[in-house]
Length: 573
Image 1 (cartoon, one colour):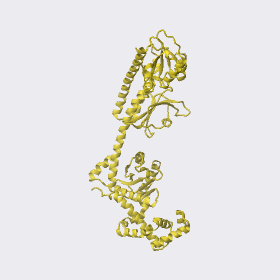
Image 2: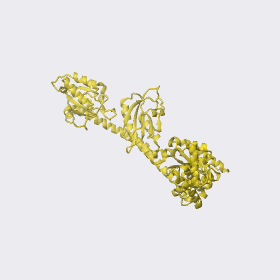
Image 3: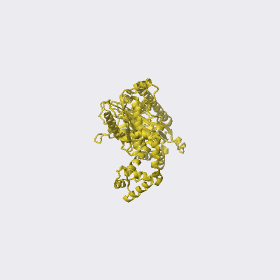
Image 4: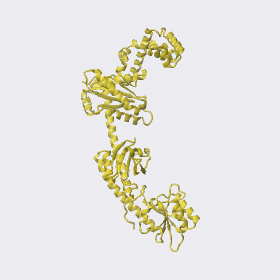
């Protein structure tokens, strides 16, 4: 009968060949292939059965010990052919049985098995296929039952921690308590979520361990065991790397660091069980936390969107939702709008980038006084500013925060990042007005090539013209002034005249900015003058054109903005 085993298995969950050699029936029978004693065995088949399924590509011999008579490998040529075929098909071990009255030697088979690193056992007459297959089956079943019992105990312990909902660090501590190993847990982006040292073990730098891990796992990743050297001057460590998968999606990895390298086989087998169950339940906790964060972000995003658009039924609804999100209805706020090409819904990673940038903006202000949300391919940040008697002080606070926001988000969103902000205001009405100004500033900044960080006050000339530009007379003036240049030369003359005006009528500077020859610049300005029926070099003509261009830009930006959002609502009474 098979002895009741301790948990000693290979990474695939099979018994090592070396564990079978401890049984009385097989003790002292190894003649070659000692290097392969760690190969796993889960079943035993006779040689005749392996030959019947040799043509089936879906049936290999991984984890199978092949029981064969010594007569099948007696001749050197036959021994090399049989052993080579079984090795090619990944047989775990070769069990050569001597029937009663047969005395063939195994020299040729031993040489082939030794070269291939596959254990070769010389079985006595009483170890026929029936006895050996029963032994292997009993041993494997007893081991499986023991693993299931131990796995159930591990799962129950970790499930109790999961049910209390204390988070990923607590799950890591529970795994350390079961395995006495160091445990590192990281998310799918490689960010460390938890690290727990093993008791009475040499300290390890978790960041160095994380950097030494192989590349991030995909949805088809499997458990792996490897040796790493986190400290170049220190000893190697044996680690079990278990992907945390939920529904086929990679949520991260759990890494267990063994206390010894190489680890004890019995401890290693137990830790494989802990790693398997631990990764499953940690995945459940990570999914739960992701769902909680997503719900919080949706709720916060809905509140921020209602806040910037002034969409509250009454002051009671505003007050109730404001208390939940920690919004001071009597406070002073500046609204910032963040825009970049990487926030556009293109490709698979834009959502991850948006979430990462939103969280970075949320945590930028000490004390968490900022509300953030992704709205219409932009990130909106509502910053609470101190109440000051001088409005210029609040505007300076908003400008400094916008600069910090740009520096913090640029690594996430790229060099084309723009941050625009409105003037600080009080309460919900101030937020709605500030958002409208920030969006207007963002639109004008794109059209006027303003600085990457721009405030409403930086475009005061447009603000002064905002009400004028809405009149029918102003729109007609801009259209009639710009139309002749836009009809002539496809709009190229308009760009040249604007460059000339921006350089205060400096012909050489304008030509240099546009990359044109001075004579070409003169020719283009003459054409523009003829089209406008006025000398563009005169101050009056330049002012008329400048005014028409600014009114046209304002009309374009405010028209697009009005289509997207309603004007700011009054504060709820």
